[in-house]
Length: 522
Image (cartoon, rainbow, N blue to C red; front, top):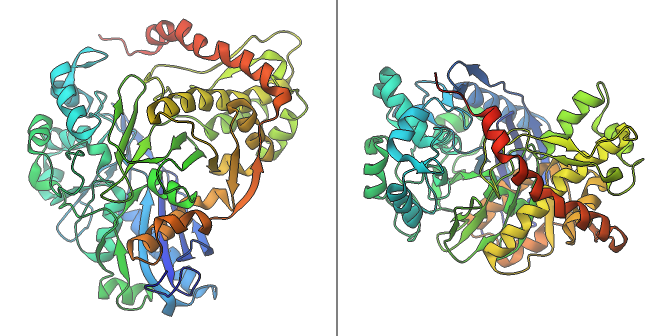
């Protein structure tokens, strides 16, 4: 373990940025992932008619710079030891920038679906909303396909090209947020197979081919000249520009590694970077990820292996639209003024199974293992004897039932049992919720230290991998396990009974969801 900063346990530091939808987290971490300082600033999304959802990308950069300066003034960071910058965070959003990296318009967020009409012209059709012929081309080459609702980079770029010609004319590149931040540090426009995953414009059968697929670019209708050049995932984009380094107080020669989606930094932050090492994230959303040595797509369950942490590896991608969001919703609705801890304490007063009340957590639709944007949540089997404690526990158990549903599909996708699961995210801070997940899923869970900040730690570990300080085989040991949660066999019967009903509830209601929630054509 040698390289910049010496051994992984040595003095080298990474400036890590995790740009979430709610705003940037900025931290300084050792190259072994140990955080020494962190900061979080909130950012609001602006909503507009017709499905618009935007943020001020210039504001992100201002907040990041301010946080870096605070960190360097804190006394916790030895600036002479900073050797790398690594950016992670949200993906499937689009920032239009000029040739210097300055935004020429707002960032279109991953929820912005104003490009839907143009996306439907590209790939829309009669089979689950898709036209079979182009969809097959996309899936065979890239592993996925653009959304027909326009809430992804292709939809964003088509919207800008058709509806905002001034922004399009001023834009030299359309960048993912992590690539935008890397460009602000370096002045270099660059992307990787990993950062461009949601654009579905690369032939992912060959991750060493650093170019966009001409067939997919032609099918998409986007302007090829505005796509950033591709570099290898895990390579160095460049060094922090002298002007930026002087402004922030960073030393000369700090290297910036390729940006990556939060899925990738989560794998690193969980210490799960070897093939089939699995992590479970319970953040606002939830997902189960694992590196695998193959490209594959399960279109029916919306699971795919996307470009991974290196040009030789893939990473299982899937998503629940609502994970920790469900607990936040329940707290605000049923326990106004209460803390999360108080809601969980109330749930602990209800027995396993919550009086056989089932909560379906599809509050904002579902993506995996069923792709249904019209699905909605609910409490089921409620009676006059149901208590608030039962409802609170049903919310915790409902997210776990949903994770079991997904995990069964992921294990089928991987063709093997995936255990243990490293658990991360804000939801992982609760012992009760972790134990419920283990009991419902029937799998051993390992909670890593500081699970809330796994992505910042992962960004630093990714930099360490990229700079050759550590190898993938060493990462697992770099991330300490704080506590292990084994399934309680005495609860198996009740959770098996409830889970048997869970997918049936979706199947019984899916047509109702469509009737009630699908926008009516005028």
